[in-house]
Amino acid sequence: MLELCDVKKTFNPGTVNEKQALCGVSIHLNEGDFVTVIGGNGAGKSTMLNAIAGVWPIDEGLISIGGINVTAMPEHVRAQHIGRVFQDPMMGTAANMCIDENLALAYRRGQKRGLCWGVSKAERERYRDELKILGLGLETRMSVKVGLLSGGQRQALTLLMATLQKPKLLLLDEHTAALDPATAAKVLEISDRIVEENRLTTMMITHNMSDAIRHGNRLIMMNEGKIILDISGEEKKRLTKAELISKFAELAGVQEETDEVLLS
Amino acid sequence: MDILAYFASLNPLNLFASLPGNVAQGVIWGVMALGVFITYRLLDFADLTVDGSFATGGAVTVVLILAGAPAPVALLAAIVSGILAGLVTGLLHTRLGIPGILAGILTQISLWSVNLLILDGANKAVNVDKYTLIVSLRNVGSSIITALCFAAVLIMLLYWYFGTEQGSAIRATGCNPHMSKAQGINIDTMKVLALCISNGLVALSGGLMAQYQGFADIKMGQGSIVIGLAAVIIGDVLGDAFFAKRMNFVIRFIFVVIGGVVYYLVVGLVMWLRMPTDLLKLLTAVIVAIFLAVPYLRGKARNSFKLAGKRGVRENA
Figure 1: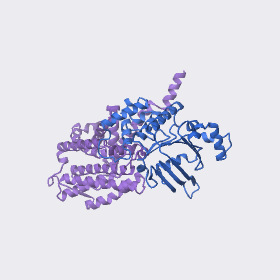
Figure 2 (figure 1 turned 45 degrees about the horizontal axis):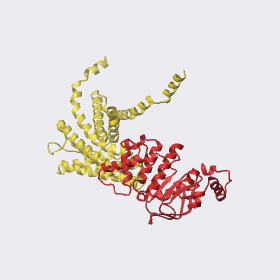
Figure 3 (figure 1 turned 60 degrees about the vertical axis):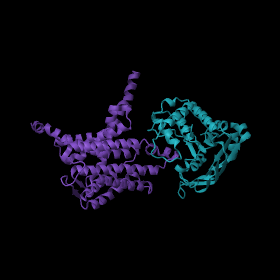
Figure 4 (figure 1 turned 90 degrees about the vertical axis):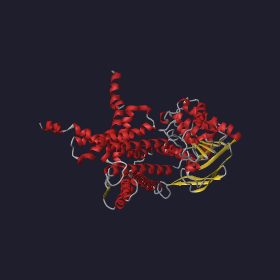
């Protein structure tokens, strides 16, 4: 479903701030794969997701989604294939617009936006049902401005928005990192459910190793702009946190006790 | 004694006599403010093109009427000229990466020359006795009604448009460009579109104003962005005061036009107080500053460090 071929990206080339963020990343995701991505700060996790989403053009390599080469597509065109949830709860929704308006915007991802009414009555009914499933009571507050919702509610809403129009690929960029532990758990549970129900191909960045082990069917670890570990299937199921830390130490050449590198 | 003499010399009747004229001008400026509302409030883009496109609208209207075109046709042409002005600003910003305010200033300054070319001079008069005009200060009563009709139709159109898929995409672009891109919205196109619509409205207002005052002048657009902002902000504050949380789009648009009228009533009051007209621009700035400051200061009155300090002392006492 997703194919990255030797993707490279250097920021600020030719300056003192030059940073090789992606040094030849290659990965192939099968349809329905749920991959968790871990790695220290600056390992290139978010950069990889941004490259896939098309936030900026890559320097070298090739990206294809569902067999379509998207390397030359700008972000808003690629968006028809991709659902995204960001780390910052403020980023995924339009604060000055109502809940139903936000959902309607997302529902039209990848479609032409013409002069039909922005939210139809029929779709409002559908949104009500979908919101009910989230279990946050948002279905009774559909004409409330999203800016008045809490961070957790906004993330849950963004998740729904990302998957309302079934995407070929769902990108979750540490989408629970800014939430308190209880809310984070709730949002993760909702994510799991939505991914499972729609059998979505998903990439989820997380700083929480237990989450990375518990969720998904595949785990990749990044370091210095490369994928250094790729575990899936039975091996992933048996994986423990201690193993993961020692693997990281071995592969990235760090002292064993510095598991903060992974966690911070 | 001097002060008493000054007040005695003020004739309340004069104030009332000037009222209808100010209302008419206020409504026409209100139409212009609708354009400013689109860029400033919905798109979050301070567009300075309007100082130029307002005069362009006036110039195009007057020149075409003088050439024998019916006034509605001339106004349509004015709208098109405004749309083109907005297009230039939009392309300068999105295609050439020029920051929004600068893009507006560049278009505005170039429109000065364009307007001189259109007018073939610094100003041009159009006589209401010789030509059929839609509005004129010669007939203030019907002008007010006509201007109000324009405002009402435009408000309905805008309400419809910003409720459509496309209008929602423009609002989303102004609110959160990041999210908009992720939802597949081409934010560059939306920005250009909004700038075109906004400047079309501004030019239409310029065309009405030129007919009302009976001439188009190269300087008629000077400072119009500030008047437009004044109307938008006065409208916001008043709308908030009367409707608070029940504000919907129609009410917001209506209050923008009301903001234009209130602004002109204040100007009328100041003229009546016989303040030197040289001070008018200064006064405009003061009015805008006051209305910009009111929401901020009101918020502060409820929630400030000083208050928190006082509350803390009380609770611990």
